[in-house]
Image (tube, rainbow, N blue to C red; front, top):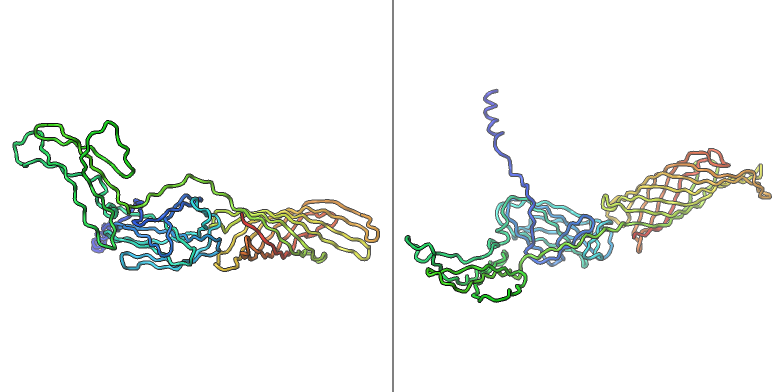
Length: 435
């Protein structure tokens, strides 16, 4: 046992793999506009078919890529082929088939309809690596890409090692001992331009240009992207000479800046629909009667718009004719329902849904004689109940065509018609709009 512990103990003390704990903001080396989502303030770089997004990363690290497909039309399903390459090697290829987001919209362009996101994770090996992200899709489809890079590696090599202000080194003349305290400095001279990198690996370069200028009485306005540093030039005799200005010029093909728009309150997504059909009571007496209702829904942001709550109000009437007594008993019912719906994402033209809810029935009963219309008894009351529902809907025009089957049960004292079950099996069809 002791020998076994001596063998296992060194293996337990060996440190495990490194855990990355720093999220680094990465910017593409190619030019791409950024779109900000209204719901969670996240933004992604927009990529179109044929226009690749290029990115340089220094590993090791873990890159999380969130993909959304976009289209001008409100398509139920958006399709495309996504590809990632490290250098010339393809490391990821996926056929995307994403449902349109019912709650997401872009601040910068509200006419673009985004899909639900798809997330990929990539392990970046040690060293500097160029990545290329591309999309193949039908005309009118684009893609937004959001990056989150978790690493402890220094990313300066990916952006270019000359990010700091480029200064000409100052060295003393002669370099021997016994020189005076005032160092004699060599004149500042322009730095030669660095050789251009080979195709396939783009690195932004900066050129330090030394321009002798005379002191001006008023400061000149400097264009954006230019920084200046005034350096005194000393001589052994401490004579005053004109100052030198070092100009740092940003390359034209540098990474684009991302400006976030001001927060905009996300508008709710609501639905209004009309339904019509028939309902059959559960008890043996009573006949099938027509019914109609108004359907109001609020699309919740949860589950990417597949969950919704709503209220529904309608009307229908039950009648019973007792032939022996020449009596007609009728009950007009106004149901008001609170209900919850969930759409099942199948990626087809027809989208099924299920739901449940609670009901309040406002009942108005009348018992009258058939021959002359004499009213024996009449009254009003309230009953309660619950129901479950299932159906399908399909996008047709600006809204959705809905077919639904509902089964319910009621309890309570119904006026004129005692212990009647005024709910039952309903089959309805309708059409609803989304705003």
